[in-house]
Amino acid sequence: MEIALIISAVGLGFASGFHCIGMCGPIALSMGLTKNQKANYYLQNITYQLGRILTYSILGAVLGIIGQSFELAGFQKYLTVFVGVLLIIMAIFSFGGKDFASKIPFISKALLKVKMQLGKILQRPDYKSRLATGVLNGFLPCGMVYMALTASLATGGIWQGSLFMFLFGIGTFPFMFAVVLLGNFITTAFRLRILKVIPVMMICLGGLFILRGLELGIPYISPKSESLKVNHNSKDFHTDHTNCH
Image 1 (cartoon, rainbow, N blue to C red):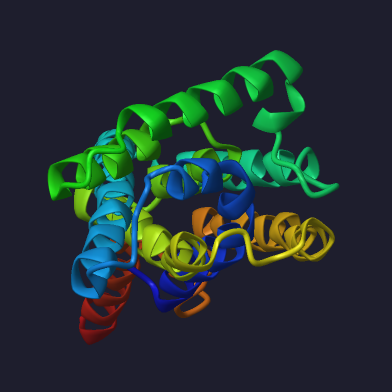
Image 2: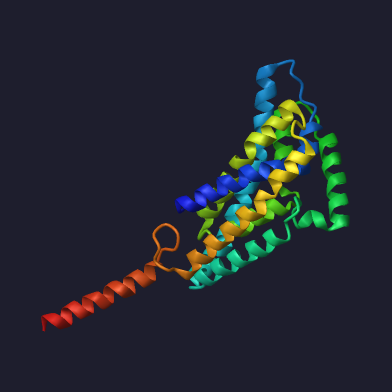
C-alpha cells in the first residue's frame, strides 16, 4: 500500500475520532468501567477499542476481496476512479459537521436508541463483554466508516483493504480511548469546528484515488499499472531488436 494511502487512512481515522465521540461515545460511557482496579480499567478499555478495530479490519478485508475481483477482471482502474468520485460526493453531503447517514432523521434517532440499549445490555465487567461491545459497535451504521470502507474497496486486495481499515481504526483509537477515561471532554462547538475538516480530507482522498485510477505515471501518487509497464518494456525491446537488424 502506498505511503499516501497509509497516511490518509490514519489521518481520516484521527479526524473521525471527533465524530466518534458524538456517535459512539454513548456506548463507551455506558459500559460502566470503574477505576477501582486501574490495570483492569485500562485493559478493558483497550479490549473494547480492539473489538471495534477488529470489525473494521474484517469489513475492509471483505471489501478488499470485492476490489480484487475487479482487478483480476481488468477493471481496477475504473473502480478506483469511481470510488474517488463517490468519496467526493459523500464528502459534499457531509459538510456542516454531520455525516450523510445522520442527515436521515429516522435512521439517526433509531441508531441513538440502539447504541444506548447496546451499552446497557453489555455492562458486564468482563473482557468478553468489552470485546463483544467493540465488535458490535463496529457493525453499527456510521457515515465515516462507510467512507473509509468505500476507500478500502479500491486498495487492491484483501490484505490492503484490511490494513486500510485497521489503520483507520487506529486513527480513531486516541479519542475513543480518552472518552472512556475522561467522559465527553470536548465541547460540542469545538467538535463541530473540527468536523468541518473531514469533508475536505475526503475530497483530497477522493482526488488521490482518481489520480491512482488514471495511472498517470506519477510515483507514489498515480503509478502506472504493471501491465502498462510490461507493454512499455516490450515495445522498447522490440524497438531495440529492430535497430540491431
